[in-house]
Amino acid sequence: MADVTTHLLFGVSAALIVCRNRTREEAMLLILGSVAVDSERPLSLLLNYLGYNHDFTAAFHSLLGIVVISYAAATAFHIEHTDFASRFKLILSGTIVHLLLDLTMHPWLERGLYLYPLKVPYSFGLVWSDFPYFPLFGLLALAIALVIRTILNRFDSL
Amino acid sequence: MSRPRPTLRNGVIVFSCFILLLFTVGAAFPYQINLTEYSHVDSILLATNPADYEGEKISIGIQIEEVLNTSQENGTIAATVEGPTIKIPSYLGSPSVGDHLEIRGISYLSSRGYVEATQIYVRDYPLPYVSRSLLHSILGIIVFVAIFFAVFRFDVDQLRFVSRRD
Image 1 (cartoon, each protein chain N blue to C red):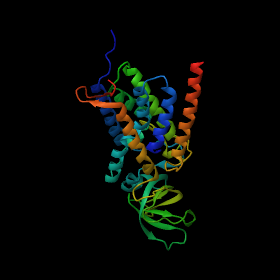
Image 2: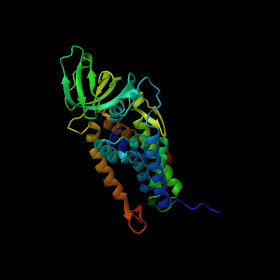
Image 3: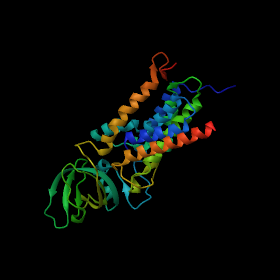
């Protein structure tokens, strides 16, 4: 999977545009979604080290997984003037950004993400997860998001 | 009548059911549905059930533990940390101990005792046991935790994250 820094940069980039007229708490929920999908990695690495076969990464990095993560995470917050549906949608938006980035990987398509619980792999098949320039693409996304946000703010002020 | 809003208890129940589904699917359906000619196989599963994949095109991730035989004209035999022995033809290069490889190949574990590689990708591990992806993640984890707790705090009474401005 792509590194957390790149996921964070893409999440912040999305939040700058999507949440530009929202509170910082709501923006933070979208950013949370963009990194929360990888929350299983420490446990997965430990289980791998201990020799246990499991589908943690595949299950979390699936459409079903992000819905579950978003639902569970949305129940763990209480933010004034936001309801559960808003929190769920914001976190889900972040998880979708995460999945889209991870889908750029796995040049060998059989290593792609799953339509879990169906173990049918899919990906855009572009680069391996240790592609060294991922963070630079994240910075580029951030720069583009700042430009777009500035333009949109100018339109609002006209 | 309005629908009651989901509580933390609902979230824990849903997440727990998902984890249960994960273990159930893992036990009941350990094999992938193939869309390419190669099957992605867990390398440990391959080592414990080699007969299931004999003669099949497979895709595995392994780490070289020991180079066993370099005298073969057409390749190198190497033992892996995960269990399966692999044979890498000379045209794919020579692996080193500690290398993390993604391998596409044909499993001959039952008949010949190795997986014969047809394609390999050597993963980037700048430090032992630390991939480039993990190295790049360190800064992101620190920054995320910092900005998250700059915005939210954990309310012990409610058992929820609340805004620091509230």
